[in-house]
Length: 306
Image 1 (tube, rainbow, N blue to C red):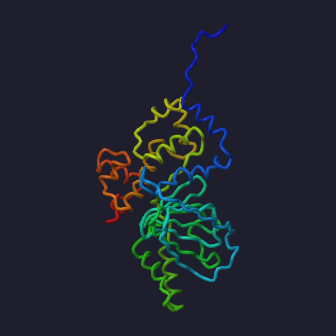
Image 2: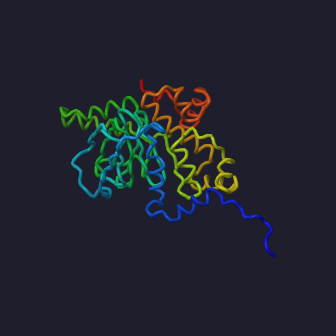
Image 3: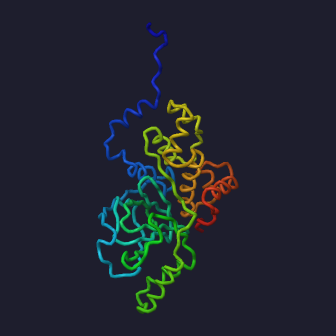
C-alpha cells in the first residue's frame, strides 16, 4: 500500500554525511581527525590566523640512531603558527614550554603542553604537534641507550621548579663532564609521570565530527546533547553511546576537557580569568574555576601569565 506520509524534509546532517563519504581516505584516520580538531587549540578562538608553517620530520625507530648524549636540551621561539607533521625520534623526548601553550597528537589523543605541564614522548612514538607564533617551546632529548623511559606510552610530566632548574642547568655549555653527569642523574631522580594532564581523545566518526569542529571553532558553544541529537537527526542515546565508545568519557566531561584545553591556551597568552571564562562558555569566573579544577586538578592561576 502506498504511503500517505508527506515527503520528509532532508535532515541537515544528511548533506554533511554525503560530503564526508567523498572525502579522501587520508582525512578519515583518527590521527588526521585529531590533528584537525585541535589545530587551533593553542590560539585564541576566532582570532585572525597568521600564515601557518608546516615542518616535516622523519620517522625513526627507537634506538635506530646512536646518540652521543645523555640529556640534550633544545629550545626555540616559533615565528609563525607551526604544525609538525607526524614523525618519531630515536631518543626519548620531554616537551615543555617556557612561554605559551602547544599541542601534541598521538593517534586520536591530544595533549596540551604548557610551562606547568610537559609531556614525555617515548622513543619511536609517532606524533605530530602544533604551536602558535610566539610560543617558546623547550625540549630535552634523552639518549635511548643511556636512559630508561619513565613510561612505555606518552604521559604528562609536571614541570616543577626543581626539574626546571635542572633542565636549564644542562643548557650551560660551561658545565664540566662531572657536573653534567651529576645534573643528569638528578633530573632522572625527580622525573616522573604526573596524574594531572590536559588530554582529550578526539572523536573520529562522521557522526561526532561536526561536534568536534564546532567546539574547536567556538569552545563556548552552548548546544546540549539533546540539541546536537536533534541537529544530527539521531537519538540522544546514539550520541551518548558514540562519545563513550570513541572518547572513553561522557559528552559533558569531553566538553569540559575541550574547554579546559582552550582555556589554558588563552591563560598562557595573558588573558584575564574572567575573559577566559566568558570565552569558553561559563557564566562566571567562579563557575569556570570550579569546572577547571574538576577537569585538571589545577587552578586557572597555575597557567596565568602576567
